[in-house]
Image (cartoon, rainbow, N blue to C red; front, side, top):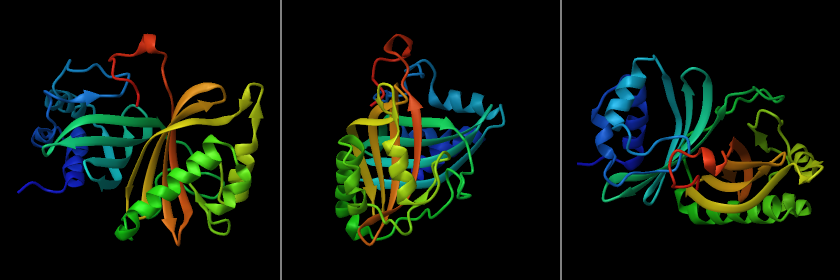
Length: 254
């Protein structure tokens, strides 16, 4: 019997550490589409790659993993040559993973509120509210982050108990508003342009967006926890998108 998709992805990512070739069977390598622009597609089988990586004594910690239809999205912590935090997204087709996206940045922090980039609740609850929570996050990102309607922040964020895991910020909606108000010479420092995907399981929702940070083309992955119809906790990674001339495959970041 095939296990839950998210459990198979946990085993796959953990095999980077162990070198175990078994979990790689979840990936259909004949169909596999890689969206990490820095990764060559089809140059090395995953089993061989993971076995090679395992000899470098990597550390892999899957902090959270969620399932949304044909998608699995995970929040991960890696220690290869340096410590990094990432989000991994896999699309399944016929019980195998056939497509992959990620967004990874150097681990920083803890922030001024003492929160790391990964601590906090890990298990999804309120599964019956998945679709309303997905809609809430989509609306928040479109209205506040893309359109810049900061006066609407209180419509979405719990202003009393908003917990922030971004290493540059601290808890509270007021701090978030101040960060979003900052402008550089070319416009908003944190500038969301468009949403690419919103994935959800229960009270956890991941929004994948494209924009710029400090004028640099950037991929934003934002994970929110929702309670009582409001955003109460936030984790994220931001990654610079390399110019197309430096891509090692043609599939695009998104």
